[in-house]
Image (cartoon, rainbow, N blue to C red; front, top):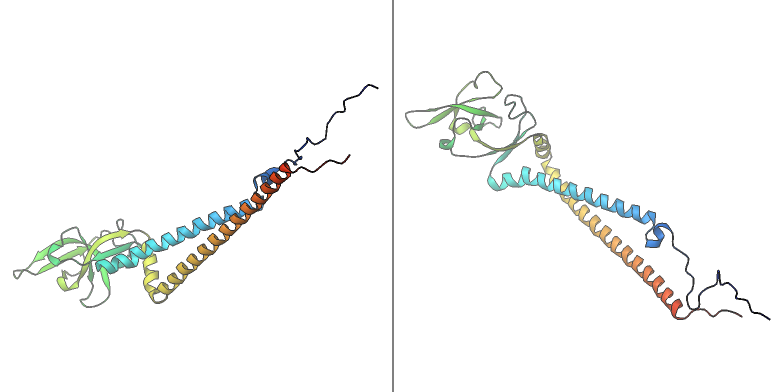
Length: 233
């Protein structure tokens, strides 16, 4: 009898087990759910880091710098210094020697000597008495007339060092809540640190598990290649 070659379509090659083709993201070992989880983690990390940086920057501007330099943070409440210093602007005022004050400086002074209420206006005139004592004429940039009475040296609190628009509102909130703000910020920072440690630990554990699973699959595939299953018949 004449032999016929039998096509080997669908038969396994000897020693090479057929492995089904992987589909979609599972071929890369990452499911869509895991991918979304990683995206959410990255977004949360970015937002939380941004919040911490913002809080730290505000703390430096409103608390640390004034404490270190002996300056005072104040908030503009009226429109008398517009347009250069509109309401809501943060003023950081530092003490200077009265002899160093010049025309054009923005000076913060007590309305009545020894009283807490203050005004920050620009120096438009300086008078020196025969005894060497200086008095200052101040005026708001938006005002038509200078302030009512000359300002004496004991009334002067300091000269404008720098200003930041919009942060005056934050400064008011900080000064009004200083008793509970520092403990609250400390609690927020500690919570953030614990959250970041927890998320980092969880992410590391998940990565190790995924590597172990992929390693196990690769090991089984290698074992099957070395020891193929014997065909019956």
